[in-house]
Structure formats: structure tokens, C-alpha cells
Length: 214
Image (cartoon, rainbow, N blue to C red; front, side, top):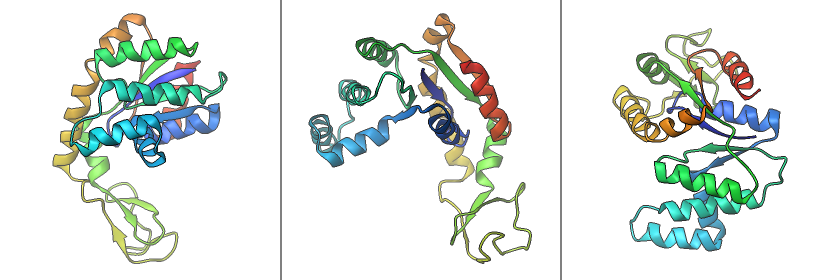
């Protein structure tokens, strides 16, 4: 099965993708990760991308398509793909269709994790972690049992991500909407879009995704 998993930062997309990887033996194809790996490995497409990036230019659709094409070539037919960060434009939608067809594949589902923006801001801006062991906490939903002390390791040092602030989160939401709006109408016409409540607990989201995949 080949799917696109959509969701803004903080919607739990990474967690759900990993659960699909573990439970269905799928592979998550994140264009950003693949690009960095290709550049580091010095592959032909990686060298091409590196030259573009060193000129301060954006990597073209053609290069991104080459990355995906090369990755799919390494995957057996029984391994499904989770596309993350691609496609983002109508042109990329067409390119992905062509790439999948070359590998005897088709896109089965587009799953969007829907979120409430105000609730997502609350979820992200309130989170913090133990600086020692990484245990996660939240100002509203999960405080340490003993104030100022990590439940897991006893450390008294905590940290917050500098970009976990309201302005950044709302900017990311606006960017996400701008990037997903161009691709959804085509997939809706095909009848393959499923929307899942991304604000539910993780297990409920996973169950809803499994139901949508069938």
C-alpha cells in the first residue's frame, strides 16, 4: 500500500508514520531526510542536489522526483511507501503518479490528520522535556508528580524547544495549509482522501488510520 500522510507540525504525523512502519512493514519516504542522506552518501542525485544547494538555490522538482524514483527502486513490491513532504504542488502530483506507475505501484490513500489550531498551539507551546533522559511533560496535561523533578530519572533540569512558541506554530500552520491546498482537490476527485481527528489520543488516531487503510 502506498499512501500520503498529511498533517501540520505537532499533529502526531511522525508518531503515526512510525507505527505504520512498525506494524505494516512500510517505509517512510521523507524528502528532507532522503535529500540529506543522498548528499552525505555522494550519490549521483545527491551530488546534483549538493551543487544546487551550494548555489543557494532551491532543489528542483526534477531532483526530488529522482530521489523518490531511486528510493522506490530499492524497495521490494511487498513494501508500502508513506510519502512525507511530497507532493506539494499539482506538478508534483503528476510526477508522483508517473513515478509510481514506472514501479508498478499506485497511490492508495491520502490521509490528513485534522487539528484544531488553537488546541494545537496549546499542545505544542506547553510541552517540555527532561534535559537528562528526554521524558516529555506538559504545563497543562502532564506535570511531574513532584514539582521540578523528573518522574523517570529524578533530574531537576528541564528544557523547551526555542521554536515551541505561538507565533512559530501559527506560521507553520499557515504554511501547511498553503502547501496542502493545491494537492487535495485532485485526490478528492479520485475519492482517496480520508480525514482523521489528529487531536484524539494516539491509539485512537492509529485505529482510525488503520480503518481508513482497510
